[in-house]
Amino acid sequence: MDEISKHQRHVASEQWAAPFKKKLQCSDDRYSRNGDIANIRSLALALFASRNLNEVKSLNILEIILEKLETERANKTEFVNLQCVPLLIHHMAKNQESRDTQTISCQVLTSLSIDDETSQTEIGIRSGIEATVIALRKFNRDPIVCRAAFSALRNLGMVADNRNQMIALGVLECIVDSLEHFIEDSILTENAVATSARIVFGHRKARVAFGEMGGIALITSVMQRYEFLSEIQGEAGLAIRNLAFQCSPNHSHMLKANTINSLFRGLRIHADNYSVANQMIAAIGNTISLDCDARQRVLDEKIYITQTFRTLTIYSSDIFTVRKLVTVLFHLCANDQRSNKSSSRTLSICCTKEGLCSGIVEAMRTALKEDGAVLAKLAIIAHELCLEKTFKQKIGECYIINVLLKALASSDSDILRDLLLCLIAVLSSSPENVQKFNGGRGCNIVLSVMRENGRNEDVVLQCCKTLDTVAEGNFLTSPQFFSTKQEVASVVFKAMKDFPEAALVQEHGCSLLIKIAGISREECSQMVKVGVRDTVEMARATHSGNTVVESLSTRLLSLLMSDHSLKKSRSVLETDVF
Image (cartoon, rainbow, N blue to C red; front, side, top):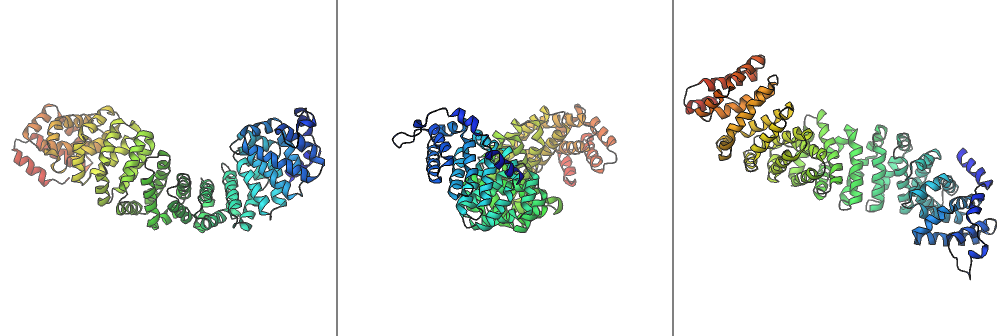
């Protein structure tokens, strides 16, 4: 209130008038000719001249100014350049008791500030926010004035300095008060909610304060009341998105108001509305980001999960929407830290049951072109969901292996590990998917990745795991493998030599070489020639305390030193458990 009093004293002194008079050095006959208003300059002069005259004349002039501002953008620029904003603010201060003057003045401010940062800044500097808040408080039970005031504040809130002023002047309290009294007025409600969304952006203290005032519960009520109005749903989604951002105190208010239910309902109703859907998805992501209970509430409602995957399918070609949906799914998978993988199983079952696996794969195709980080997260999500065999089968039918192989061949090294882990999960215990891997030149691509990233132990390890996984079953006897088995053995052998201390590299290297050596005596002889036996003996000695490495290295050495027939070699393999 001290700020407003200061503003009133400033306006009363009419210090604003000097620069305005200098700008408007023109005769009175220029603003009126045969009853027609000529231009913004003459209109401003007319308004200046009417400040001490009757209210009706000034209202007529304001109405004409508003009409001109709404019809041509150039008039807005001229209005600001002529320093007419202080004139308008002074007019509001001089006529504080006039409902009509306050209403139309707020409408002029709204028109000036639409999509115009220069005007928004100028109005903030020239005490326009204080004048609007005075009108809002003085006529706090008049829906017409409040509607116009919030419409202006909604636009002015796009500038950071203006938001600071609004917080200091108590606009958040005005919003709560108006939402409590005018929730049946859809236009006023939309403007008030939109104003709150802008004010709390970037201000954690304001977010917390608004939540404590009951603002979150009110916005949730608004969403429930106007669930079919896309404009209100979009602004409410933006407000919740900003209120939930890195703000744990507000998450308890949202949980109590069951805000998550309103967000998912809005997403379901307006799934085809790009703008609304994106606000809802982002709000959901922020709401569940720091709150395990909110995540669990989503997981407990299968319809929420289904709607998430359905939306991913709808917008799988739009990287901006995919990015937000991946955040939601990533947070839901994160709940497994306390639920023994039940979250991933729930997601997997819902996705498979509704036939929505294709959305994940198509989103991966989009991310492959647009955003490697999103691609990596999608790979992690798919990896987690592969816990369910049915999901693994269905996503394999959607050609995920082709997408993963293409990604491996073209992606940066920092996401290769996630891609390989996903590939291993898709291939594991799935002969059908292994066959798709064969058809996609998988072996050659994985070997190429190993060569290009030979110094990266983690990538090399995952490549060894991938090759070891696909070597199960009848893959060893496929025509394609016969053409690459020596190359596989050579690259894996090099990996074992390069990382002698890495137990897992030695483990999977030995496992894979055992399978290759079991094909024929010629394979064993070739391995002996290139020195595999020495490397394996070193691995056994280095990892003498590791029972898995010891067992596998002993088996491999037994094969390499054996003169038995292929039949016996295979019989040895059949007694081993891999």
